[in-house]
Image (cartoon, rainbow, N blue to C red; front, top):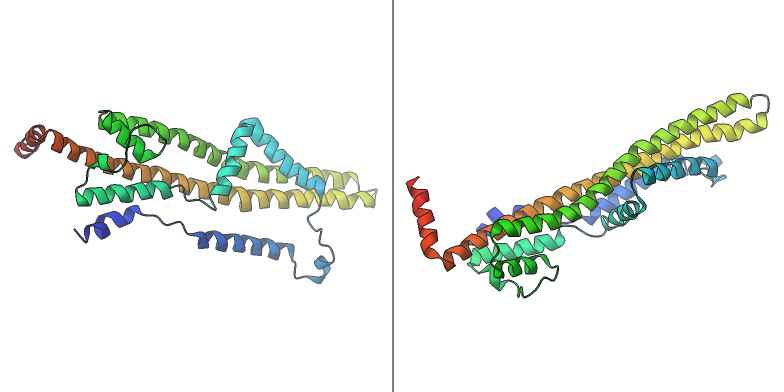
Length: 269
């Protein structure tokens, strides 16, 4: 049994890697710094290179205005919270710990009823499962209740990914629209050279803001949350598979005659 955990249990463990987060942020900051050209003497004299408020508000304000029109304020706040947590917390950490406990119970032959008190519903997943087992619920009923709880959380996470994916399309589109508007202003200002500069700034800076917001903020965050959502679902599937194994073992203990009939039927078929 010593090699069982290495052969069968290790693939279920996923370790959160903060190094990849720091490296990715450093690379993005480095790319932006290179684009801004902080090493050029001429641009060092103008630290407010991207300080065009009109262009900034056009893209940022327009993007979030369009997002709020499609979603709602609560979803927007939840997206910010989940995006922040994605850099600090691992959404599968608690589930993985429970899986480890269930794996240990499977290997040692322990009963699932001994893993938690399960006297009442507390919100802790394994405790609630043990409580349902003590209440004589079938595995199918337990699985349905847990699946409903997981689906509720997953819908919130999925809405956050959908919002970010929409942002990846809206921000560059508004940047392009700002460029068109800025070029129109340039053509209308040919007789007054003093107005050409602000118009050209709008034309160029809206594209820059739209590209930065879409490519360096919305796209990475959407991909990160989507990846974590996949891990969230898969770890809960692994958890319920182990619960099923332990419940079948519990059934064999309680009613060995029924279990023997099932084994005999399986061998005859």
